[in-house]
Image (cartoon, each protein chain N blue to C red):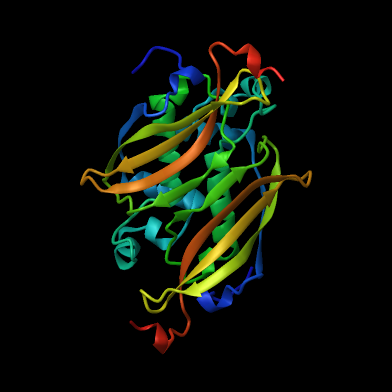
Length: 157
Length: 157
């Protein structure tokens, strides 16, 4: 747990932030699915086993939400984050099965000052999540806005 | 509400499926955020107003999950859906504010038989959600797998 507040300047390309661990229970998979993605393979062990996923598995959107929570706990929650305009892509590489433990990393791949809005910068983050067998289950990339610690004069329009 | 079961063959390019309406309450925005995205602008009206979002606003991942529920209710829930490998992109165009009512459409933009797995087809869907002011709040595209009603012989490897 870092106590320091993070600003745009702290997101230097190549820097990594650890994510997790987070174990995903059958109960929470079913609870999320009942509300947001009530497909059989997310609602029961039996239907999950009968599906191409091979067991009770989390909705991809549940994995996405869990990823966000890990990201908030790792760096967003003590940062100058101003939101994100979307997601560039998210790949669900393997099913997240009941009982799996997720671990991963957020990697800064690009950072640039937003000239149209002084004091703001854009950071491209790549997020990778693995399960306890070392298999990558989810990869995503998105751009996140952060306020700068020391807004530069030349960023003023 | 359509009673007919939908198969790959029913997802013809250009076909549209209506999504919503779905009103989003302050309570559910805060509940989702507490669990998955505890950033101030998703947790209170005051912090939302002070943010660049202009009010208590749903996490983008909450909008994504609500979109999935509307998609399940509209067509996935009575279809031969076999899951999706990910999301090609998702753009959060405008904040989803407490009290907003979402409406939208799922549009088939492409459909092709998966030669490597007989009996399966891939359908590219574009999902658009608007608020009650007619503003588009979210656009996403992803590929979804569906079983075919009548698997073609030539799809066998």
